[in-house]
Length: 296
Image 1 (cartoon, rainbow, N blue to C red):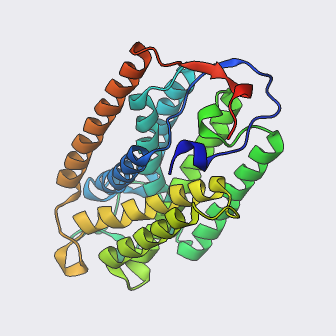
Image 2 (cartoon, rainbow, N blue to C red; image 1 turned 60 degrees about the horizontal axis):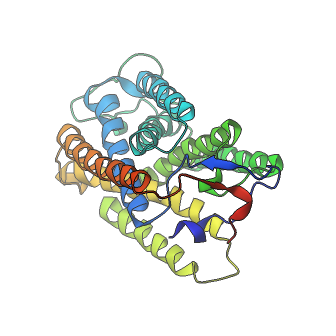
C-alpha cells in the first residue's frame, strides 16, 4: 500500500503552514517492519509473562509503563525518527499481548507453561473470553475513531503533526494491537485452525485487502486500519508457531531465542530506515512542506 493511496483525509481545521513529518511513509517496508514488530511483541510478551513467570498482571503494568516512556519520547520529537517510531510500535505490541491475555484468560492450567502452577503476583486474568474481550476492544477502537472524526483532525498519517492528533493515533494503535492479539490467540487456541492455519487465514485476508485497493468504492483509510489490525494476529500466530511445543503444532524454538532473533531482525531494519531517512534529509529532499499544497 502506498502512502498516497492509504490515507486521504485532510485536517481542514488547520491553516496552511510548513510542517515536519512525524510519522513514516506507508510502503512495503512499513508492513514488513510492522509484522516483524508484532511477532516480536508476541514472543517478548510471552517471555516476560510466561517463561519468566511474571504473570499477566505485573507484565501488563511494566510493559504499559514502557509504552508510556517510549510514547513521550516520540511525542517530544520534532521530526520522524525510525528508531523512536518503531520502538513505540514494539512497545504497543508487547503491552497489547499481555493486556489481551489478562482480559481474556484466567489462572487455569490451560494457559500456563508446562510445569507451571501459577504466574507472578496478583490476579492472573479476568477470564472474559475472546468474544467478550474482542467486543470491548472493538467498541473502544470505534470510540477513538469517532472522537478522531469529530475533532476534525486528519486521518492521513503523514499529516499528523499535533500532540492531540498523535495521541489519538497512538491510542488507536495500542487498542488495535491488543485487539489483534485477541484475534490471533483465538485463531491459534480456540478455532481449531492451529498456529499455521491461523496465520494462513490472516495472510489470505490481507491479500483480499490488497486486492480491494483497486476498488474505488472502498475507502483506503478503512483498508489501512483493517490491515493494521490484521497484521497483529498474523504476528501473534507466527510468534506462537515459533515458540509453542511441537505437540501443539509449534516449532518449540522458545520465547527467549525467538525474541532475540526477531529483535536482531527488527533492529537491522530500523537501522536501514534510519540511514535512509538521514540520506533523504542530507540529499536535499524537503523535510517540510505546506499542508494545503498536498492533494490526492
